[in-house]
Length: 481
Ligand code: NAD
Image 1: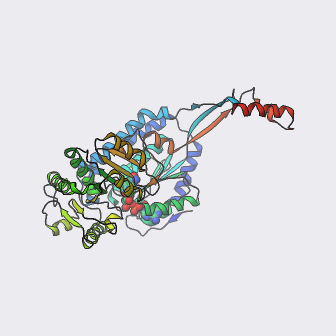
Image 2: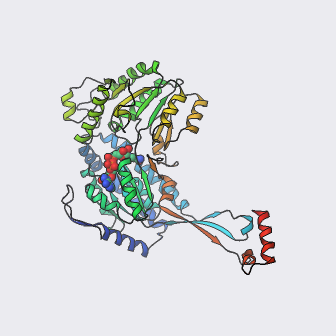
């Protein structure tokens, strides 16, 4: 039994996670394939509860961060969730259907089918940066696919985690959906549970730990991880469009976005003009950063200090630093806010060029040709996202065909993530597996292959004892396959 006595912050009672999982599994076994009407009702009440409590969610998230605009929470969490639910309500019934699959000539007149089946109980571990969206989007997939779920939200957003637990507790029983709040000890115990599938969203380093914990139970994992997502600005790019889009992609949630453009690659001769333009753009978006209700604070002192260390290290190694605006530094530190900071004259030994930045610092790296940019990207770990700005069709095709990343947006940042009709996931160190839309449905389903034999099977010609009849049949089959 996985039982934790918690003296950790944010958890007041001992919780028996193993016991809850056992109850969920028993409830699932008693009802292993809920009909569409039940799944639809679950998705509808989830959508309604999120809508009914949207103001509270906005408030809790803003307080957890120190500040985050309610509008930003609407854009980056609430609307995406409602979009995911509407899409699931529209399509899940169709995804649930048994599909006919082709049957090779030599096996006819038998027939093949694929039967999607709920897996059972899905574990969901979510991070703090979009704490509602990244807990609920996997839940939409899990419930649509007919499963039960247990969620472990981040300890960095305790108000949101408590609220999530309370709100989901009003619409679901513990046997349907359970939220386990708490810190790393809870997370460790949680990831050691024998779920039927585990979806983890978080850092690559913790992803490795979670994957090894899951491996002990042979629990299949979807890992939604991070990394350094590059942006290539081609000479053919329309800079008037590119600059505000990159600035917005970088400054949304103050850069604390898994798919934020981490760094830019562009020819050296264009770097100064680009730096001027993006600094000016940031100052237009946020004329003041300190005290600005539109600009998000850095989640915690430790992350604020981490960003300062990245900058100091870069400066000590010869980087040029330009900060948008002229805010009072002490006030910024008090509010844990970091304005857009453009870092040029970078070198590979700088930490800012090695670690995921996860904040509003933007290194701009000189790269003269597309080939240079591509070999730079290929020499690094495969990123979660890649952005290419330009109009040259041949170069666009080359980038798409010859670089590997979780996903791509062309001429913008991050929009591919919220498309329900394409898979969202990383590759290698940025993740494994995918979800959203039908891809989530499939990740949380067992797509069972079923072979229906006919009364007139040729198979009996292959029964022992082997002899001339067998050889005749084998010769025939060799000609067909
Ligand atoms: P994190 O890895 O520190 O934490 C994520 C979750 O893991 C939290 O709920 C935490 O409690 C839990 N956890 C921590 N230690 C654990 C352990 N030893 N065993 C099991 N669970 C443990 O990540 P974070 O700081 O919350 O989020 C930022 C990271 O997440 C960034 O790297 C970012 O790129 C990534 N991210 C990825 C996506 C995506 O969809 N691919 C989305 C958002 C964030």
